[in-house]
Image (tube, rainbow, N blue to C red; front, top):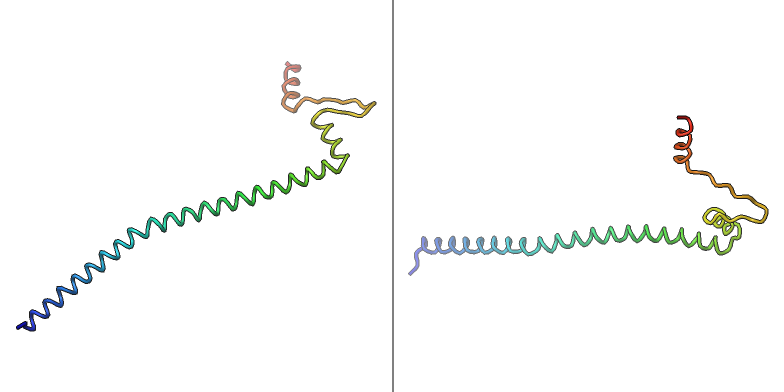
Length: 113
């Protein structure tokens, strides 16, 4: 029949096959799981960036809504915008336009030469 040495060799052989199979399964698991893990992290980063952008846009939207509400309900604000952006004035007022600082500097340096 089988000898004790033969059975021991067979057990060792089966153990080696078992551990080799276990190692192959572990490597396969790492190879299959790593790309999914990497993709998950990439998606999480994108999600965080999107949330930051959403918060920024939401804040900007609130500021713009307040400005719009102020313009719609405040005649002083409407007058201010008309004066600053469109150079409008009331009857009897005179509008003075000043050059920018850079233009004023250039004209001063030209006259001093």
